[in-house]
Length: 146
Length: 146
DNA sequence: GTTGAAATTGTAGGGTC
DNA sequence: GACCCTACAATTTCAAC
Image (cartoon, rainbow over the protein chains, first blue to last red):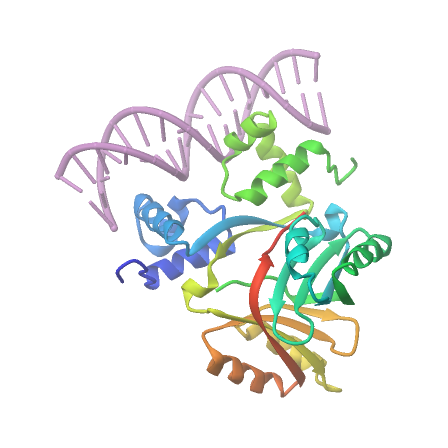
């Protein structure tokens, strides 16, 4: 246990928060059989331990004007890694960027307004390497955690 | 406006919720210059319109026992698509699954306990097609929205 | 962890522009 | 229609146990 006590109760609490991160401590307490202060204390510890890293809102990207999602593999050109890592933070279109093993070092998930914006983004990425783009048609699994 | 009124105020509210989805309506109101009831009303409408699809907690996967993340491309075998789409929902390890254009129809992001579990998962996926796996080394951009 | 009191927040009603 | 204000219910927080 020491620092990180991931018992059944904490797992239940995390499941509640995962289902609805705005659920009140009182309601979580009712579900897991704890008082509200007890839940609050556990959640605070999970935050302090870095197990909980934040709370996010999920949006329908299509309805906020970003209906086109794509996956881009980017084979970074020699000497471009550092500047890419710096610049990629600034692209609003980039939802995720992972450095992966294999020939294409970077894997990006992006959301854009339309084909024009995607093309523009690809052009910009070409400065750092060779992009290979696939459009996302649908997402059978969206963003599960734990 | 009609159904979907995404004005500056709503964007500000969404930015607050994105930074911290547990932020109180009162605090959001202070930030964006609105009363708590006004914020609550706008958020409720954003939910009803399906713009907000939920609130999620972000976890440090390593600290919950899933330190190994990977990206798997899966070239679905003929006739296996439907059963794959049905089964992929049940794999707890699969965080995301996207159907994409190109030769490899499916792109999965997974998190597992270690190499053994990854190997087992790959074996199971081979039932539905040809997987190509890349380990995630780091994630320069984690999960931005809007 | 629990209980109980104080501060804060959420919510519903009525009113204004 | 969107917003504010008021008042009450619920929640959060902090204390003591």
